[in-house]
Every structure is written in C-alpha cells, then in structure tokens.
Image (cartoon, rainbow, N blue to C red; front, side):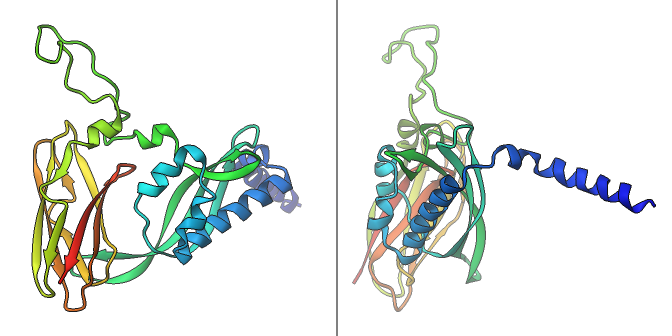
Length: 257
C-alpha cells in the first residue's frame, strides 16, 4: 500500500529536475534543423574542411573564425542544447574528442565538453561568438579607464585599453618566425605587457614540432619562454599560442631545412 505514494514521490522529484527543460522545449522542426547544422559544422571540423565549416558561421563571426585556432577534432557528440525564449538563439555543449599533447606524456585522445553558441541568420542556424565572449579577459570585459588627476602626455587618462584587441596586442613574441634543422631547439620569448594575468594553450600544426612553454600563465610585466623542438621527421609548420579563453592566436612560423 506504500508503493503508490513512493512512486508519486519519485515522479515528483524527476519532474522537478526536468522542469526547466520542459519550458525550454522547442518545436520539433526547429530542434531538428539546429541539430542538423551543428552536425554539419562539426563534421566539417573533423574532416578538416574549414572552407565548408565557414559557410555555417554567422557573418559577424567570420573574421574570428578565419583567425582562430583550428585544432584537429577526432569526433563529436551533441550533449546539451538550451534555447532562448523565442528559439532564435541556442547555447550548446559539444563533447569533442581530440589529441592533447603534454610534455613528458604520450599523446592520447581526450574527450572534453566545449560550449558553442548558435543563432538564426537569414532563416538558417549559424555558429557565432558574441562580442562579449570575444572581449573576455582573465579579469572581465575590457573597458576604457576613467580620467585620473594630473596631466600627462595621454591627456590624463589611465593607460587601459578600450577593447580586448588593444589589451591582447601587448602580449608579444620577440620573433614570429624561426628556421630550424631536424634535431634542433629554438626559443621564443613571450612578453606580457598587459595589466593582467594571461594564460596560453599551445599547439603545433606539425607532428614533428614539439612546443613547450615554461609558464602556461604569465603575470603582468613578466615573460615566458617557448621552446620548440624539431624532431627528425619534422616538417615546416606553425606553433600557435592561443590566449585563453577567447583571446587571439599568436602564430610562430617554423621553417625546417
């Protein structure tokens, strides 16, 4: 006689857990169209067909997509989709499988959850990155600083950049290209001239080039040294340092002779 109340109680708990999803449930054709576009976009990323992937990118994000780091994806899986109230935008979580390289550890595939945002543009779902996300910094969105007492060559304003692009332009390598021979090592010094901590994600476009950064996080006014080792099978390529989480990519071009 106690089983029925217990079942009702369990059902109430499950309903409470899913109540948000019930109110966010989209029309079937909308959800089907979005999932098809997500699948098309990430399947192009898996194939390395970035020209086709670009056709699924929103107009205001195309330059960001062109200049962004494009790691090799092995597989993907749509984990979660959450729509806005009128089903014209959606935030998704994609489980991405990719190879991660760490010094001293063998390369191996790892699955990591990656957020992505989508919006309707001319009636079709497109991948995009908002201006807020692009202007994110380790300590919040960058804004112009207020005037400070006293004069100065800058008219009395604090030397704080107005945009994230201005902020990250103060993160500089001492060289943007190196020439190497198989078996050699080259070093590039990265200077953090900003007012905040910056963190890096380092990747190589060539399997024979092994980059290693002595500091993955660099404090204001400090430097990090990037060591690039060319293995015997090394080919010319690019070592990319992406400033996390949404910063630009610093490309170091490597020529192997």
